[in-house]
Length: 334
Image (tube, rainbow, N blue to C red; front, side, top):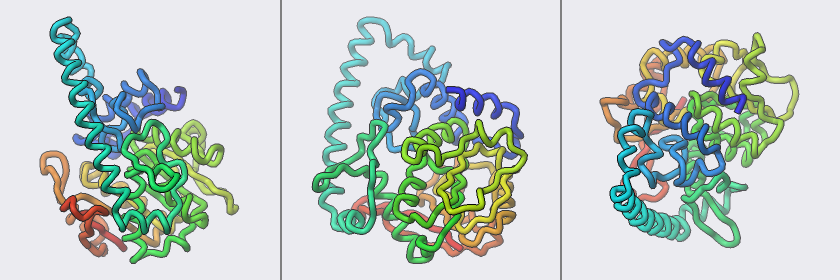
């Protein structure tokens, strides 16, 4: 846990005006940090921990896993024998409903023609590790639903970009690293990667990518003592995982920059700061993805994101992989 402890300690020393998680994430990050310390990462994509709520494909079963210190103190009354029996009965009932939901979702994905086409086109290797429960079987293989949704996004973006020609890739807010795992698996030409996320999300993503790519992953314990963060001058795979404040030390050129959803969840000054560095890195291509339904109390209209990029982004709406969801995603590209 040395990496996690170092990240948490150094986060308290960074410039909060530029590298704050924002209202949307502050509460979630504190809960996640506590859950990681208590339970580790073995089930962060399952239901037994509140680690990955909102940035992984985990599902909420027990609300106690989602509470901060104050919430846990208040909920301690649930330990009283009679109340505890009632609450556990509700958990059991909720688990039955959750299992039914997962089974039905798996059937929808398994029998969807668009999903089958993606399975035929792309590689999906070890996509259900760390307790993933949102999954389905097709043939003899197990597939993560989250990965299929990401493959659909890449398929849409491929109408604009040729991922087969990208060598360097920079992602801010990479979830738990699944998008980078998918891209590097399917496009071996992508050899140099910068992955930046808040604490403790970056810890989860670093360890997830380390599981898949071993010593090709460079973590914060290595970069924090360097004056400059650069790619090695070779064709070896290199995935550099950094917290937000380390962006000031990065000196690279980037073929493609990507962000999914998290820009609209940040304070404006943080977005402007990140865009400054995206420009500094002489970034050739940009792709942003966001959701069409947003809460104005914590996020803002994703259509406004182009304003931060000198209004040069094209804006389109795309259907969800499963059209019956009636959900659309907003794509901003350059």
